[in-house]
Length: 123
Image 1 (cartoon, one colour):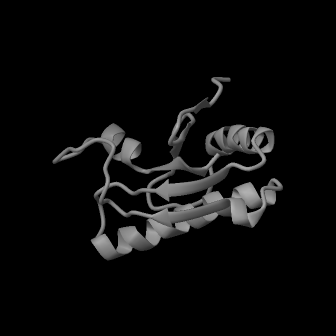
Image 2 (tube, rainbow, N blue to C red):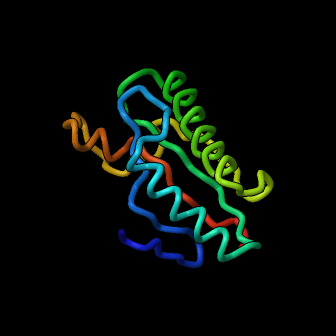
Image 3 (cartoon, helix red, strand yellow):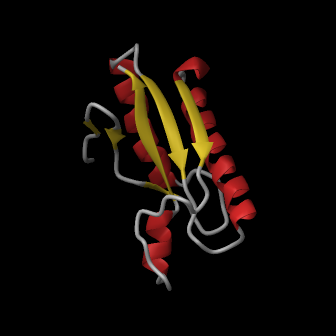
């Protein structure tokens, strides 16, 4: 497995992608989140902020709610693996920060936009 990269501002994993219209963590996503758990266990003072995103299909309001559910499921997964809840928080950003700006988007581009990213709040 590719190891996470820790920069000044974020922990870079392989992207945590979500299925269309879903907020559950996939098996591939769980494998990547397990790497984040490992990094956080190696850096006990690290605090992470998870940013979750959607593709551009659906209304803005719907996508904000969906991305919030994705952020919550990401945070809950990390807590379930023993990360203290004061070390991980998350927020949904809907479709406001696409990874790939496209109109119209093909299915692969939509998939790249349905993701979670991990910013380092504190090292």
